[in-house]
Image (tube, rainbow, N blue to C red; front, side, top):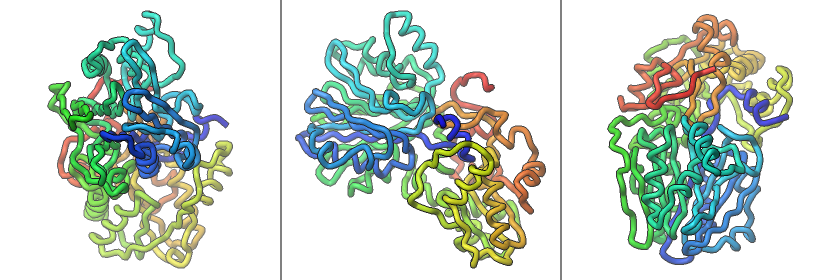
Length: 465
């Protein structure tokens, strides 16, 4: 079974990638810090993990397939010696599941070495790749990220910052980049801030870049601030230098970071992820009043919204689905029978809380409808009298091109069926989606990318198929 077959089993927007970087003035255990940073970001990608370490300019990279804990051990980390490092955990949005596509990517060019770790997708990668190939460049991966590193190397001068500015001026789409070059740690966030990136500092004074603040705080570090949209930060022995490389004034962070991707203990663009999910649940309760006996959340990201719904509605919150925390990605054939068994292995009903009751199930989203239908059936088998299903996000009707693996539009259930038709399809007594207006309220009214809900994107996208 290949990667694409497996992705089609899932009823979620798939995880993005996670990036992490650390810079110290002295040779310290930067590889170990990066490993623990990746461990904290493991929810963002579970297919491969990698670390590049710079020993005052000389870069060494180690990467492999699987979880960070499977790829690295104490001996490997001890051999990665240096004063700066970057790391990456990958979920395949472009490119297949193979070691060649694991990151960070490393390249040697005229003026030295460079390593790049990238979260996101470029919308003009194909065009740039063809231009580079016409100019003699060769590629060893199918990644957008290799387009970036080749572009930087092609434009390279002794001023690596200028080469990076020139390269990112040519690319379009979503990107959070961490790079090692010229004994510097460099971070770049796309002009719209679609992908997250933040800055922090460890207890020993080393500077940290990470996709989420939880990776900094889990190391005992201090969160400093988010990298701004259109900002490049250069970290070296002199500290942190900020360069605003884009004059774009329109912010459009991905709304699904708060809905699903990010850990609840993260703060992204000044907004607490847990609080925004609880607020979404409260707004959903005001939007859709249901007579029920218990509210349950689909682990893990549906739980805060279920708590919020319970607080607002007065319906007691309880644990209704127990997650097997030791299960990884189950590679099975995509038959309906085995798909159902895979969900049952991952989530088991707590019958004592469900039997004979009217149950409200709250999940963070409903994308294809396959898993939702199975969950409702599981709860009904556990003896529920009624099952009401609510989504703590608006209906997903359009594909995303910015680093999220969504189905083609014809596979998105809300793009082809009405709410009532979906309700019948998944066999729910009630179905509702959080309105776009209420989603904005849960996100404090800030500007976000909502293209997967309304088809309006901040950047030009390919034609949907």
